[in-house]
Amino acid sequence: MTAPPRLEVQSLTRSFNGQAVVENVSFSVEAGQVACLLGPSGCGKSTTLRLVAGVDMPDSGHILVDGKTMCDAATHVPPERRSVGLMFQDFALFPHLPVSENVAFGLKGGFSANRDRVRELLARVQMSSHIDSYPHQLSGGEQQRVALIRALAPQPRILLMDEPFSGLDERLRDGIRDETLALLKEEGTAVLLVTHEPDEAMRMADQILLMRRGRIVQQGAPYNLYNAPVDREAAGFFSDIN
Ligand code: ADP
Ligand code: MG
Image (cartoon, rainbow, N blue to C red):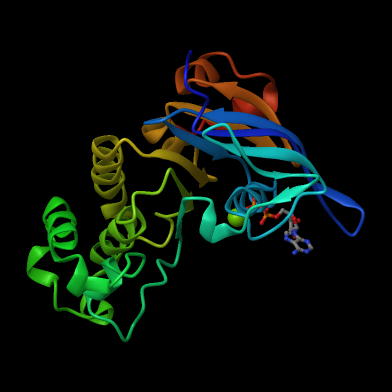
């Protein structure tokens, strides 16, 4: 028997004030795979992510993790029991905690109970020397690395990332994208990454979910979308990539 997908989303719909913001959205993400939800601002990407995280509830549809129902008409598993890690654009590190405690935040017993795991993760992102630093003493790129390993520390089944690179200096961005991708692949995490930048999706995704006005209009491997866009609007979206 083949294992069920790490994440499966079926016919998800969410409306606000009678307006469908996410409409009949279905996709799945396998273990070790990075799926990019790509589309212009306002198309419903963050709303989809919030539904998967469990901080918002759909009007209809199903969400399954490892084949187990997290959400349907009768079920709502709360966010802390979904084994989902979150990482947002502003990193949201705790300013009053040193790097060690930030990284250990999702682990039972904090840093004192998880010294080895925290040190190993810091070493993997070349941040060992910053273990006692506070967030304000770090550059944007360094804060991003701490936020990434904090999200990975509890070994979530799925990592949800909402525009995680858009706050970074453009000159650093490609390097940090590559580093992040390497770490995600080493950990074997399934990732759902939201972005409005086609080049980011092309660079990072195994699978692109192209979203527009609440719907997924095309999905597949990056080069399939690039080479055979579903329509003119999709072609225009990818045409800026060099
Ligand atoms: P994206 O992340 O793709 O930029 P969002 O998912 O944040 O888009 O938002 C999609 C649409 O849903 C937007 O028009 C936004 O204003 C609307 N929206 C999102 N959350 C709410 C809410 N809680 N109440 C009302 N409208 C919302
Ligand atoms: Mg958004």
